[in-house]
Length: 428
Ligand code: ADP
Ligand code: MG
Image (tube, rainbow, N blue to C red):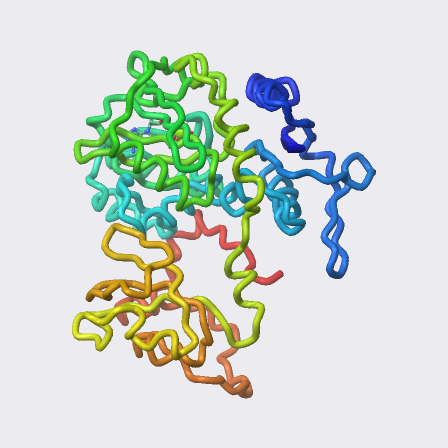
């Protein structure tokens, strides 16, 4: 295959090793500086220029997009996706992984261990939020920090409040997270490639430090992960949309707790620690998958007018409980069941003979109009909302009231919060 490695650090250990591993296996490989691309958009013809020349054909690209160039880097990857080139990590996956809030939001709807976390804006919400995650000591995290730099441990509620107020006044968004004390300054880095953990290490913080990042002085040791840790790491990478990922987990008392999923995990630490050819596994994986470029399902499936993807819940007492997919009449409604979610298991392409159970969720593709009756009434919208005239709006009424707030709060203009009010304009 002809492989492009997207990287701005042409000489770093990871890039060197990946190129070397590809060459050893007889592939053609080029390291392409991500920042030297031009993205050309024209009707029906997404195109890429590299150093002012039209890019030649590549079978696959391996993005190694650094955190400082996420926006441009993911745009380049997205362009490769539009051109049907296999990308080892999707642009969406990379964007997800760069934002600690977004990644935890995505993970939290799945049955996967994460440290309890909250995100608040209003000063009045800070104290209850700290209490909800278990009180002090508590972790405070910048949403886009890396290498341990944006992670703090506040010993008392008072200091936590002060730190959060300071950071918010500096326009920084912060997460408040339960301190997983039992992990004792240690964490696990599992290196996931495809549906396998190809290497793992434990990082141990030194001295008084609670952060185990190698950049913070953490030392590494090789570790054999049990099935639960492997399974969690692989699922986390899959949920995030990443095929090559460094999954960081804390060893909580109830098992693995995902802290973050890195989309450009470094190779030096893990290869030196495990003495395994991780670069080789990545290249072998790409060579095996090169015929399956990432497809944005929604983008592709919803282009036919009136068709779409939706999830159908099968509640207790539903007429579908006990009947097979075949007998359920879904096919007669021009509906295809793509995946069945049952508890914590995911059954792709469920057989037509499979019996439906109460609590099942079916991801279906079909004609939206015919699916409407299968969606619970509370989420149902009017068929074709008519465009109406604007109602008379009160002039410059800024009292923004949440539906759950008590009436007495509705007139409170919260003047004490003006020091942390940095609401940006919502108009573009
Ligand atoms: P970064 O992206 O900067 O590496 P992480 O969220 O991975 O940020 O946190 C850095 C380190 O801090 C982790 O490797 C871990 O050792 C420690 N840490 C982070 N969150 C927690 C937590 N909730 N409880 C205990 N230790 C934590
Ligand atoms: Mg980390």
